[in-house]
Image 1 (cartoon, rainbow, N blue to C red):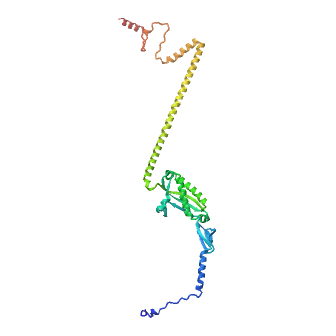
Image 2: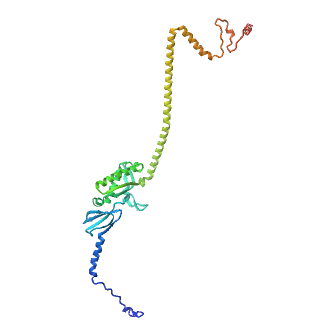
Image 3: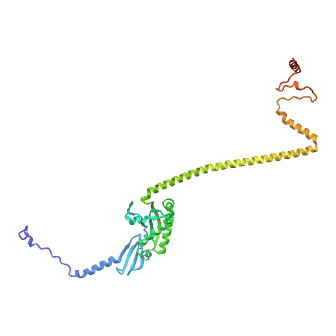
Length: 342
């Protein structure tokens, strides 16, 4: 070391400069640390979407709104931030690792979603519960492990509601009704336990049969849809044919009633006319007889093509008449009689 020279300075002869600290620094250092600690522990900031629950010796003493605040140094006073303006969410049957990406985690997550329906079938129900904290004091201190308890309440209510319905209702038409019923019951349970939570919405994300029976369930579902289609077609044919048949039946019935009324009215009219004619004949037989004769002739004569008017006292009229419509003269009749004699 002594033989290594750097210019005119030897390494062995180099000495670092001596730093002299103020004589009272070590005495004032604990006081400085204490002041920094007090400043750090007495000033705190609350974000706009949060409130701070202030505790004095572990006991609740107040709530601080968003902004800059001061408190007594710890451990005299502490605070805990509670998001009251933010919509919180709990997921059941799945987990969201990041926006738009869902991941499954083992049997515990699957166990949350597998439920027994009212007709003893199994359905896989995945849902989310959206909620807000409305009372920070109740949320922090009324229920121990409030978030874990809240998840248990969600599962209990959902299983109760699903267990009251058939698997067809759960998988198809009853989803909205189930979500509304779960929201109502869960809010009542949160109010009963004084959790300080308000339920915003229950969303059924996905409802399916278990993977092992999904192919069979799809076949059954297709068969049910085919059955519904055939039923709808039959109802369409029924609605088309039955009203037409009923209308035709009503038409026939009304036609028969009209015919019956017509026949009855005609019969009553004929009977009344006959009675009136009989009364007239009793009063004046000869006049009535002649009138009937003339009325009959008035009705029949227009239907006769050829009319021959003869005297009622004439004799030997038949040889002069040709029934085919031709008139035979006396000379022709005599010639015909001579031919018959030969």
